Image (cartoon, rainbow, N blue to C red; front, side):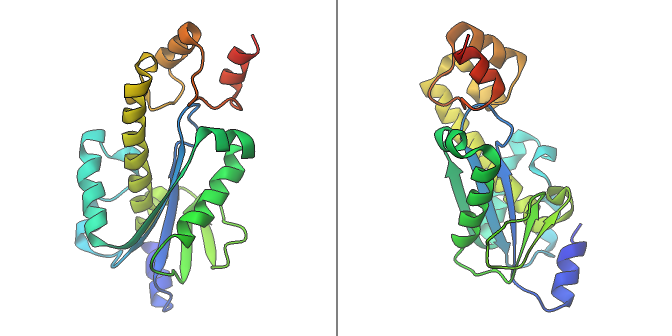
Length: 202
């Protein structure tokens, strides 16, 4: 971890923004994209920051708060389910990544993303394979995006309690599939996803 950031730093390239998303594979709820510029990606406190999927849910909030305390800038973009449907998840994700970087109050000299390069960004950027596991800035963005999205899904659960959004967060699980079969999709389900489209066109 930190190798890519160290190489960029050694080359005098700073600041660096990390970008990641949460909810790409979910069939309900928004896509959330975060971009984070850390004041010091080599700070000892950041040892706890890693891929959000590797941090227990009950510990993510504390890491989320830490990132907000030590980040130079954070930008979060939320893409509603209807926009994911109209644009397609990949296009919506790339557009959200661009907007997240543009929303930073600190202009990055370089942008590192998890898995997908950002076309048309206007800032040098590099897609890093499994970036949320090997780049601290991307890991921080992963945590921010995941915590923001999980909070949205818990609020959504209050509006649509029959689906269990607070538990599965809109991903396809046996419990979610059963709820869909019983109640059909709601306004927060992505109609462009195969399992939802199949229910609609029964």
